[in-house]
Image 1: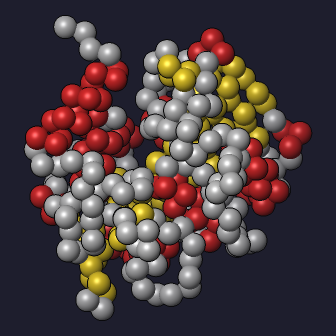
Image 2: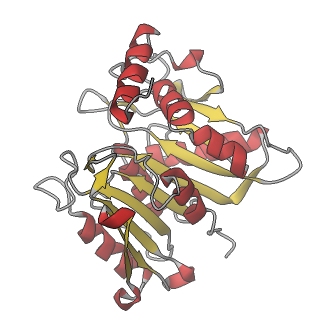
Length: 307
């Protein structure tokens, strides 16, 4: 029997609910309703009675003698790390990508905040508290490096939706920690960025995204406003733009290059995926024969803090 992509998603979500791993579960950090602790690779960081959680995937190819890149993959608004790690790692095969390309993957857990849900706050308030998500990310990197040999020059942040906001926040304030970022259906919130750090970015966005619209709305900027911000910040010439239609015109790639420290910005606008308008999703349909996960890694892996 042949299943469509949407049918497979439905089967996966129903299976998750049956297993008690509903995507609507919430987390309160250490007092977790997500039950993250049952996931393989579960880890905690404790500071001043505050507990933060994450799930670590170690690729089968890991060699303790070799420095290994790390990808931090941030979930969306209201999600659970365990659920997200399972969906990303197994359904979207992000862990298989890690096996093939020899990198570690961390799936951190957001905490309950003012909106009475779990989500990422990408702004750095300057505090050395693990409730500060930027500081927590720094401590997460150090925590993993205390047990595994992380290539600290090749740490990357990627995220879906609100997780993409977090990745943008790290590029903005901690470009000294993060070599490059990848965004799936996310956007950047207004921030004061470190003017001395420059970060390369790859961003995938659906033309029909109804949560974070391509053209923006009263709450969020347009994707092209964000592109222009980073062109300016990274000193990337607008004249460097190379535009290419892919998948018969269903996908358009905009590539800007030649910025400070050889930075670039690549934007994929997904007009149609699986024969439907590109929405608010983690994209997975091949683009000119290459899976978006692989496109993402091919881009990230070009960059190092040592460059």
